[in-house]
Every structure is written in C-alpha cells, then in structure tokens.
Amino acid sequence: MQLHEQIREFILANLVVFDDDVDFTNDDNIFELGFVNSLFAMKLVTFIESEFRLTIESDEMEISNFNTINNIVNFIQSKSVYK
Amino acid sequence: MDIKNGIKCVVWDLDNTIWNGVLSEGDDVALNPRIKEILEQLDQRGILQSIASKNNYDDAMRKLKEFEIDRYFLYPQIHWEPKSKSVGIIQQSINIGMDTLLFIDDQPFELDEVKSVHDSINCVHVDQYTELLSHPSLTPAFITEDSKKRREMYLQDIQRKQEEESFTGTNEEFLKTLDMKFIISEAQEDCLKRAEELTVRTNQLNSTGRIYSYDELNYFRNSHDHKLFVCELTDKYGSYGKIGIALVEITETHWHIKLLIMSCRVISRGVGTVLLTHIMQQAQLANKRLLADFKNTERNKMMYVSYRFSNFKEVSKEEDGFVILENDLTQIQKFPPYINVLVQ
Image 1: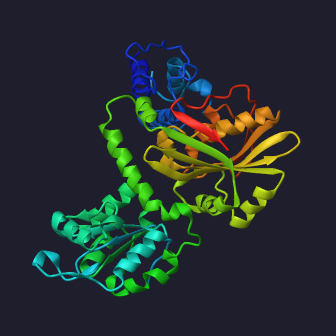
Image 2: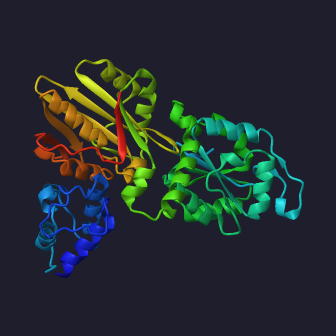
Image 3: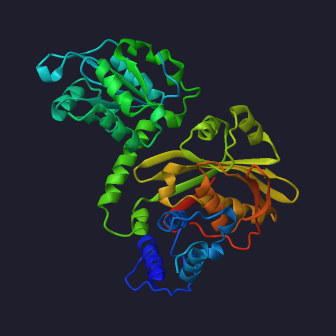
C-alpha cells in the first residue's frame, strides 16, 4: 500500500486543479478527470524514473501504464523489485 | 582571440575593464573608450550581458546607474566571492551552456581561476575588448525582432519567477493569473529568420534533431504540399516571442509532422501540447490520417512523452532510432483552460 500512497501524494502535489474535496480512487483515470496537463505527464515520467531508479523504454510509454494509480503501481512493480 | 562557440552571454569585470580605475580604492573611475557602444551593440544583437566583479554592490550599482549602463546587465554578481562562483550563478540563472559564455577581465589570476573551475567557458583579456564586435562568435547570422528583445524577455522572466514564487495558490490558479495567449499562424516571410534561429538554437525540444536553413523553410512556406506553423506566447508581462514551429507535409491521405520544435522556456507554462492539439484538430477536419516523425536525441525525450500521452503510437521503427508515430484522432485533448488560443 505504501507505493500507492507515494504515487497518490505525487499526483496530489502536481494537480493543476485543486479544491479541498478532490477525490479519486486508485482506479480513476487521472487524465480523463482533467486533473493534469501536458507538463504533468513529463513530471510523472521523470518522477517515476528517478524515484524508482528505472528507465521507461519507448514501448512502455503507453498512457495505459500511467493513467490510474493502480496501473502506475503495477508498472513499477513489473519493472523492479518493489513489491 | 580564442573563442570556440557562438556566444550567448558576455560576463564583464568592472574595475579596469568596464571602467578605468578601482572603485573601492576611491578612484574617480571613467568608462573605458567605446564601452557604451560595445554594450549597446551586443545588446542589439541579442547577446546577453552580466557582471562578475569584486566590489561593494551598492557602490558599483550606483556607478553603473550614473554611467547609464546598469540596464544592460542580467543577474549582476557584485560581491567578494570567487568569480568562478559568480559565473556559475549567472550560467544557471540564464540557463545556457557554459561554453556559450565569454568572461572578460583585466587580471590573469581571475581569468585562470574561472577557467580552472569552468573548463568550457571562453576567457578573454580586456586588452582585446575593442575587437569583440567584429569577432564571428559575437556576430549572429541574423538579427531578428526576438534577438533585439532578448534581454527584455529575460527581465520579464525574472519578474514572472518572483511573482510565481510568492504566489500561494495552486499551479493552475497561478497560470490563470498570467492571462496567456497562444497565437498560431502559418509562417510569413518576416518570421522565417526567427524560425531558422529556433531550429539551430540548442535550448529547445526538437522532435527529429533536423535543422533547416532559411531557404528550405522558405521553400516549405511557399509549397502547396506543406504547412509551416509558427506560434507565439504572450502573457501579462509581455511576449515570450516565437516559441514553437511545426512543419507538416500534406498528402492525399495524410498530414505528416516532419518537425516540431518547442522552446524549453514555455514548457513550465503547461502549453507544450497546444500546437500539437491544433494540428490534430486540423488534420481531423481535413479527414486525413496524422503521422509524425520522431528521432530520439539526448534532449528530446520529453517530446516523445508528449506524443505518446497525446495518443500517438509507433507504426514503424528504424535501427538508428528514427520512428514514425500515428494518431487515429479518436481522442483529441482540449486546450488548457488557462490559455487563450488564437488561430490567425
């Protein structure tokens, strides 16, 4: 669960929309909710690569790997020893 | 004079360089011959200038104001710290390569000290300052509207940063306060020089690393089989100048993005994909498929991210890392709400 919280914290810190009751589940598509902009995608990629010391290959740069908290966590776990 | 690269910023010493004498020793200093003319000329050419001087800040600034030359200098470093540190601060603040800086001083010790820390910087002794204006490294091929305004644009950036740092709301609320306008137009002849400058300047994202000459761009501008878009960003502080271009090839069945360039300076404004969205909309209206060339260079990974997160998929890949991306145009993101997009 710790990994989910870490990702959620990053997303909350980088949201472009913010009101106090912003709420999304681990399965909500953060791109469709309009919470994020083009800059966010770049920040997210940089964050994942540096925080988890991994390299995202071109063919992994699928939005489906990054559009929900669960998908991001699954992707990180598939790439590394983080469990 | 041993200068290796095109120079983007000249860093001046003050005592016995800009002026004759040592201010802190009570000398009645006077500007060295032709200094004013040189500062003004470099400024007009779009070459930035700064100061690395060991002096009392207030005294030196008062003198610079008295000589009416204070406005030329960005991030002046006037204090007693080593000059290598001053030069480092200037380089980071302006965010350009160390090899595009030129440091001028009268003391060999200072030149050596700076050079010993920053190996790639260009150093010149003040003896040679009158030759600066005729040196090729300080003579850009074209002087555009944007180069003349470059210092002003950096000053606006400083103001923006200060305001951004003191802003307490969210990022989007801040972006809303900027009153940004993103102006997209098809290139006219008068902006080709700036477009060419964008293709050769290094501080930007280039989708293929290709560089086009003025003549090539002019050919595309007149070609019925191509569209050459340029865009400009303005906000309440002023204009960022021309910050992006896209070259699109038009065929029976496709729009094909051959080149996309975005200035790094505007990425933090969340406008990186506005031009891309516009092209996607236009291709959809024209009922064409949309393709884009991309070649991985050291610096453009973020552009690949933008393409992929805008729903482009790789359809072919060559060994040298060149790929063609395709977008089925089923999902086109909206323009960000904090920006007013004008198509001319």
